[in-house]
Image (cartoon, rainbow, N blue to C red; front, side, top):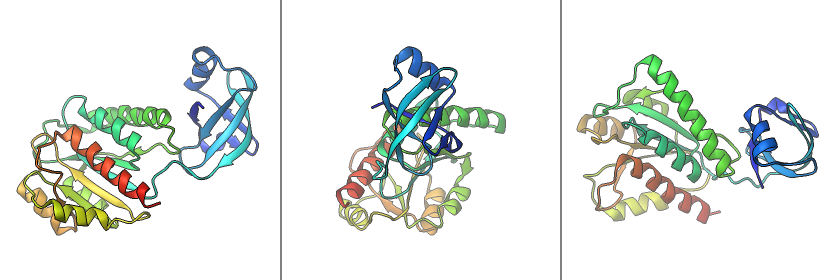
Length: 247
C-alpha cells in the first residue's frame, strides 16, 4: 500500500486531498487510477488514513474509508542529538534513524565537529535534511515526519533535553556492558528518551562532563569503535527492540 503525507487541513471529513509533487508521482509514476487505495498520514497525529482515489487532476481527490489508530510509531519519543558530521554523513544518519523510529533529530555543533555552519548555510542544510526525513518517513510508512531541529550548541542541547525521562551518552572510552544492559532494561515504553552522538572526533572531556552533569547516563556500545554515522542507528536499533518487545 503506497503511503503519502498531506497537511492536516487537507483531511476534510471524508474528503482527502493530495497535492504537490505527489500528484505527478501518483499519476505518472505509479499510474494509479480512480478506485485504487492508498494510505495517507497528516504527519502529526500518528494515525493512518486509508483512502480510495476518486479523481486525479491537478490534485488527487480521495474518499476516506477508515482510520487505523494502532499506529506504527514507537511507544516512546526518541530524540537524537547528533554532533555535526562532515559531508553527507548527516543525510545517512537522518535516513536510517527515521526508518528506525526516531521522533526528532537535533544537529549539535560540538568542539570536535569538522563541519562548521553559518546561519545561511544551516538554513539550507536543515531544509535539505527535512526533505530527507520526509522521504524516509514515506518509504518506511511512518505516521509522522520527524522534525529536524535548528542547530544547537551542546549547552543548548542538554538544556533542551532536561525534561526527558531517559538521557544517554554513548562514549568510546566507557566500560562495563553490564551497566549499559541495566540502563537499557530499565527503559519503559512511554518514557521520553534522548541520546547524544559525538562527531567524527568524538566527545571531548568537557562536553562529557557537561552532559553527565545534566543527567546524561554514560554508556558503552561495545568494544569496537563505531563511526558517527553508525552509532546513532545502532542506538536506535537497541531502543526499538527494547520498546517494541515490551508492548
